[in-house]
Image (cartoon, rainbow, N blue to C red; front, side, top):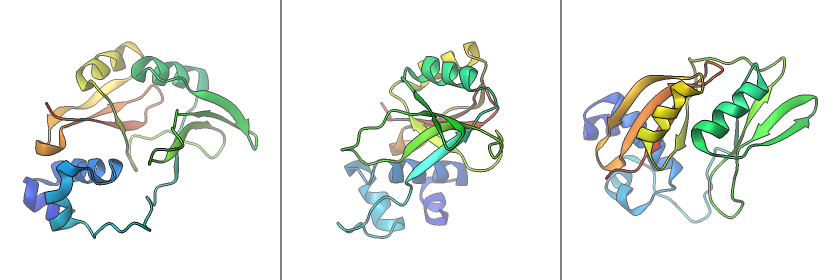
Length: 167
């Protein structure tokens, strides 16, 4: 991260760049960052992030929020007594699976880990956030060759990051 901060100018921009680099499994536009900051990629390595869960208090409200803001259809199930709503995921593409999760061990928070979702149109996504009970916490910010980032609070109070490719 320190190397990215030196290269891009500040820690928040570096954090966003690191998230984008990892999320995209080193696409061509990250090669100059990859060469100076990240360990080399080898064919037998895999993404260490396997699955994530976003805590919710009201599953129906949270599902409405994510489906309305992002346009996804979530798959709701009960697993081991916990209500879950799984995000769409293509099995043949890299990336972690994830779900909204409700239960006694899940507590929404705006501190701690931040999950970043890739969106096609960050401006349109930010406009939908407030209408669905969320808030913009960090406005759309250009992060150089990495595109744009923003952070929101979802309907449950979780801090969620957004990323979008540059123009």
